[in-house]
Image: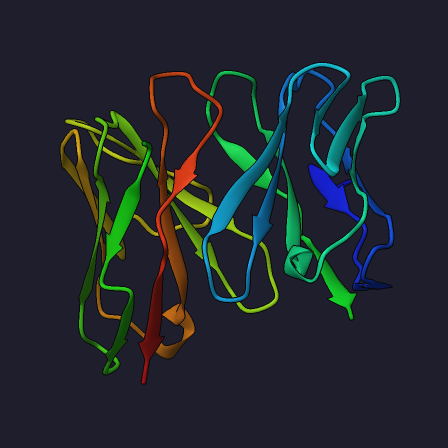
Amino acid sequence: RKEVEQDPGPFNVPEGATVAFNCTYSNSASQSFFWYRQDCRKEPKLLMSVYSSGNEDGRFTAQLNRASQYISLLIRDSKLSDSATYLCVAPIIQGAQKLVFGQGTRLTINP
Amino acid sequence: GAVVSQHPSRVICKSGTSVKIECRSLDFQATTMFWYRQFPKQSLMLMATSNEGSKATYEQGVEKDKFLINHASLTLSTLTVTSAHPEDSSFYICSATLRQGADTQYFGPGTRLTVL
């Protein structure tokens, strides 16, 4: 099983729609998780951190389910500018600072 | 805050040459920096962890003699790809954390290496 596994996508949704991504992780000891977005040929940029059951920031909501070892990202009222690849990230070992990236989910918002 | 820069942003070189990539933390001191590689349509893969004043820690399968890392100061880490070959063509990205033990990493803009 991969350490971090994501929906492969791609997701193509109309502007204004709600879209959700799931991500599973294998290390049950992981305490914190991250969602990054990466635009084409650019570096990843931190979108949200998830330390407890969830986090909400405007149109974005991240939820953590420790029992099932998955993290989700929900985007409401999607905008054209949300088109990007979304990367689910988890530490390999808590405190060791080493991050494992999921393969990413490509999202395209259509006008 | 937490700005990381990389130089150069793009480099094209001939096979067999060496290429040096710089990673700088502009507004903070970074005792630890990380080097990643990303091939097209793939995710980021950690290559090595760079610690200021000590040897880098390489991930399994990454040749330390081919990818030389020097972290001589708290704001600069360099990655040198020695005797580059076309299969080394990739997007190289560095990152840094604000403090020891922090999980959040801030990424540089990346360096696109093309080896002819």
